[in-house]
Image (cartoon, rainbow, N blue to C red; front, top):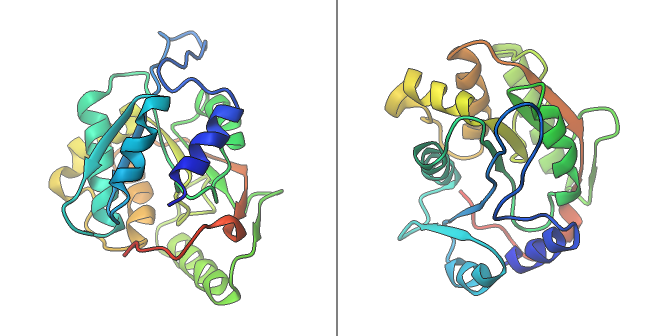
Length: 220
């Protein structure tokens, strides 16, 4: 639904989806766009493919957000290489691409970066109070049960990972890398990456523009 609007905003920021080099003393990193569609929006992705490389991974039915994460992240690790940065975000323009340069800079010194609603300067816009309370509770419970140093926002999709962190986590946990269903899988990814080895986690503030969503979500 919102993919074309996201593509427009990415082009406005002049990001190059094909070869985005970052000089940090390591070989230049490749950046590409990967989308895992679970809600029948594959046609929209194909329509936008001319604007840049889009690797479409399509589930035949809606298997839920956890399976989407698992499929997409495993594809990235299988086809990636050391030095790559892997990002996850919601493609309905609620996650602002303007945060990407800051996230890339932070990943130069970290293993995982979270665009956080709870970091100083982060905020919600148009987020229903019921869902906001649920988010506070879920994040509080995650911090109480399995605190990951440097993390405050455990449930937000907008993150960047070093390739090596995800590769290590998948090798350590195997098929049990993602076992939770629904949005709890997002916290699980972070915790299991931390359990697989030393993890430098950092956050930058972001404003979650829930008011820009073009329609109701079909994610489970």
